[in-house]
Length: 270
Ligand SMILES: C[S@@+](CC[C@H](N)C(=O)[O-])C[C@H]1O[C@@H](n2cnc3c(N)ncnc32)[C@H](O)[C@@H]1O
Image (tube, rainbow, N blue to C red):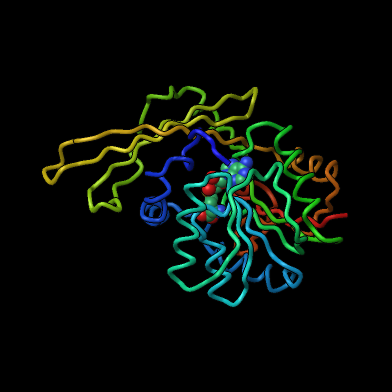
């Protein structure tokens, strides 16, 4: 697979720094608290015929499962993320099958009893057609009665209204961290929302600083994510041949009643 970089995670500089800046980002605001143990529990309950971590990124879930004795396969659209993930697996002594692929079209010779899409991987599918293609394709790669879990963020009218008035250059500072080369970097983003497509279009700006805090380099990386309404997700799942096993309002199995920021879905192949 040879793709020109299109989105944030396709860029090598992002992949190699992803773990470093995410750690700082989630110290401030963590919508995904408890995610690794949530998936470990699911893998223990449903993964006896094989687990695949789809959009595995740098392996936050894949490697956590391996550390707890569950050797899952991993796949991600971004070759750069797969490379970082494979290097980390190798350094920890795990032999894992990690391959670059689009979740809308990968085909595995092995069928799985559990497919995981962790920490918003599904939100990177920017049209209903792509979402549908991914669900149908994942279904094909599951055994009879196999489980698929993914998360969505509940669309929030207040944030939507703010983002509808944000231009793609209206940056706000998200965090400062130290990159893999040991240089300080500031990360800013500007996210605008299109209510017609339900797409949040973001620009992520990375500023590299010298020891005195002067900006010595700047790069901007795009990121698009689509918001999905709950009812839309329910219809989509039904259309693609899945039943709902559970819906949680967070990775600690919080109730999904009312408005939950992070909605965790557990589906079963019908
Ligand atoms: C927010 S990251 C999450 C990574 C990982 N699951 C984690 O928890 O750290 C989303 C990942 O989705 C991947 N991705 C985006 N679109 C994809 C697609 N169509 N098929 C497979 N992976 C995709 C990106 O390359 C990125 O690594």
